[in-house]
Amino acid sequence: MKYTCLVIEDNIIERDLLEMYLDKINILEIKAICKHAAEAFKILSTTKVDIIFSDIDMPDISGIELLKGLRNPPIFIFITSHPEYAAESFELDVMDFIPKPVSIERFIKSVNKAIEHLDLRKKVQTLASEQKSDPDFFFIKDSKGYARINYEEVIYMESFGDFSKLHTFDGHTYTALINLKNFILQLPGFFVRVHKQYLINFNKIMSVSTHEIILESGANIPLSPSYREELLQLINNRTLNRIAKNSDI
Image (cartoon, rainbow, N blue to C red):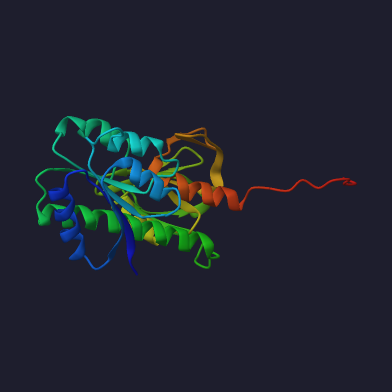
């Protein structure tokens, strides 16, 4: 399977270099190579892509302004000679920020990071569409031995590097010696990633706003733009979209 990408770069030399790098990566298919953000915006209005490789400092519309203007942006990787944009870029949850000049090694590292994210996203979508057939509980090792936890008791999980913290509805917190990326591969489909540091139990959602999720326990969980589209798709599948008329009820 291939993922699609789009390049936005106003410098012809840099543009040709990125095209040459991408030609060496078989898993990526170039949908378009754009000279400026306005051209990219027009293409994105009719074409869906998985990854955007974009310069930041461009005429008329910057790469950051383009990202802010997209309702459900794909993965963004900024490539720029302006390191002062790094902090603002990561606040927007970009996948990576590559300083120019770009080496092939640095570029491939960034692509691998994006592909890993896309692969995990696809697995979450697949799990969410399948009925759960595994046992409804699991064990984790804690200071007293092994603790049995029902999946439905877990409200959310939080990443702490190489380990994760599980928060249950009764207020207990458990520490698991496994990172969140590997944890999600072993969980039923109603657990969804909503932020690089958070995984939630979809069945425990009370409300969702643009940047925040409130769970049944009262916990407020940040919602990253990178994961908003997948969450909203799941929500739309559970949304009542027709009101019965002349009902006897």
